[in-house]
Image (tube, helix red, strand yellow):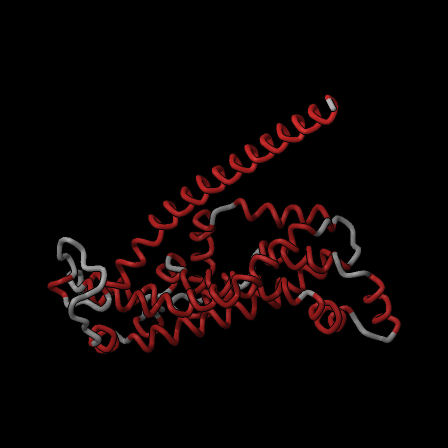
Length: 296
């Protein structure tokens, strides 16, 4: 009888300890989520203000307290953006540059990644580490030499200046190389027996197997070029060649008091980036997780 009582007592104590641990774990999770909620709120507030301002009349922009939901909506803000500046031209230039540079980046990164992952040559790994080390060099360090080279070959104030300087990325080579390393070499050997050269093996055999890596690189590069400002400011002067980022900056300089129109234009600029991120968020996370988990 005494043993049963001791067993029941010990069992009760164990349950109390387990319940206490669960309670502490739940409280810790609540605190963590509250901290994340505060940071998320602080981060999203400027976006909400921009969204609200884009639909307001100019005299209501700085109304205090802030009207998060405008009492009167002015839809003409969005149409006025297209009449005040050549917004359609800027939009087309952004789409064209982002698409073309992203395409060339995928091609150059795939070729370099295939060479570093599947080909055997002297100094391959050292060369790859040297190339990867360029990730630590800020673009501001090389922008003047790039500008001097582009000036000498006569491509300043043309989209080719951006295509030639922005279509190579060490990050893209590293990302695709990690995927290529995970593909068994037997596929390449079988393709060589069938008469395929390295170029065919790269684009017809290896590339389709590394689709998640290509999707991740495509999204990162497209968003990076779409949001770029400094390189465009340096290489482009003609108004007909400007992208949305430059166009909105010059619009702000000329219409510094038209905050409603500026926010409307900014909102239109963000639509493609937000849409791409929302629909491709899963691919981005999976692509980076898979690349990070592959051993070189």
